[in-house]
Amino acid sequence: MDAAIKTIHAREILDSRGNPTVEVDVVLNDETRARAAVPSGASTGTHEAVELRDHDKLRFGGKGVLTAVANVNTIIAPALAGMDAADQGRIDRTMIALDGTPNKARLGANAILGVSMAAARAAALSRDIPLYEYLGSDHTYLLPVPMMNVLNGGVHAQWQGADFQEYMIVPFGAPDFHTALRWGAETYHALLDLLKKKNYPTAVGDEGGFAPKVASNEEPLEFITLAIEQAGYRPGTDIGISLDPASSGFCYAGKYELKREGKALTPEELIRYYTRLVDTYPILSIEDGLAEDDWAGWKVLAGELGTRIELIGDDIFVTSPALVKRGIEEQVANSVLIKLNQIGTVTETRATIDLARGAGWGTNVSHRSGETVDSFIADFTVATCAGKLKTGAPSRGERVEKYNQLMRIEEELGSRAVYAGRKAFVR
Ligand code: PGA
Ligand code: ZN
Image 1 (cartoon, rainbow, N blue to C red):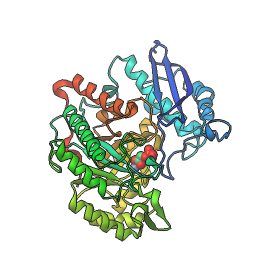
Image 2: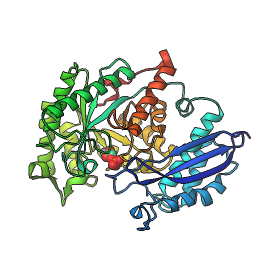
Image 3: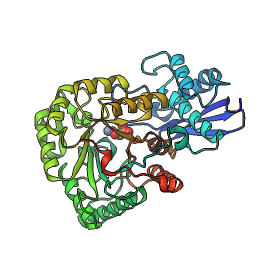
Image 4: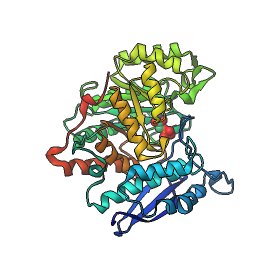
């Protein structure tokens, strides 16, 4: 068998924050060589699959990944040798069984995911087809609406800016992906000019968005709406706004502490705050509006805003089929964020997407705040027809690489390229 796995080799590399992460090379019997690198979050959900770190304080402040690397090289590699790289299900099931824990705590989700993605890429290369085609089915592909995080707050701005973590512009009204990306980049530059005029610093946060010390959590929405107009677009018609407050990060003992505004809000008060924002600005979605364990609050939020906007669960669902299933049953949201490294294999990630879609929920593929130049999620989003991809601002190489890969895919698909547009958002 030509596409059988010959060797698997992992190494420790650096991510966009200068922290170590896992990179995996897979070589097949036919000499196909493929590589994948694993991202890393900062505002992580408690129930995510385990990102295995060495905790050796003498190396990278304890963040080294040599244990995960060794797990690939000495445990996973021998077990997968000779296996068909195109049998993703078997590869992923084998690693899950080898790990033997419910959350990939023994081998590490970072070890397992690196192999899972590199095997997929090797299988595609061996067949000489693009990754999105290999990962797709029925030759239906969808270019996602980019959710571009142009203003960073929360932990991604070292809690020096807004309490809300992400303010995204969403050019859903564009006719195609490359036009959407241009509108987004132009709006990003209009925002830069606006911040300069206001004498706000324009250094960027982890995901490439500006990270100014704003006066309130609402002020960025005023700036962004103005920037959309100044770039020549219509807020709410051409370009909308998505928020990821990532509220688990500022929830203490059931109260949501907005330091920027000197307030501690109950879930009901925060929901009223969001409702006012939705009434005032062209907001299409709110992700993690409430904290990961505040299921009761989520239920109230869904009742209040679930018919008007997309309510996306990130920390609350952590891409886990079990948690998404519970969310569907309890009707606490209408959309899920999809992060491969929250669950740890390509196969399980697809299962979560299928589950959400089956319930009529929205799906949003996402990068992590710590990234590499690996653009796997660009192909993955097109192949799974997820409809939306959030991968940061049109700034910083590791963010832009995903958007550029989507432009290459769109060009290659030619007349077969369909842009998701407004329909990608559920209400
Ligand atoms: P993270 O943040 O990658 O730091 O977890 C992204 C998000 O909360 O969506
Ligand atoms: Zn999030």
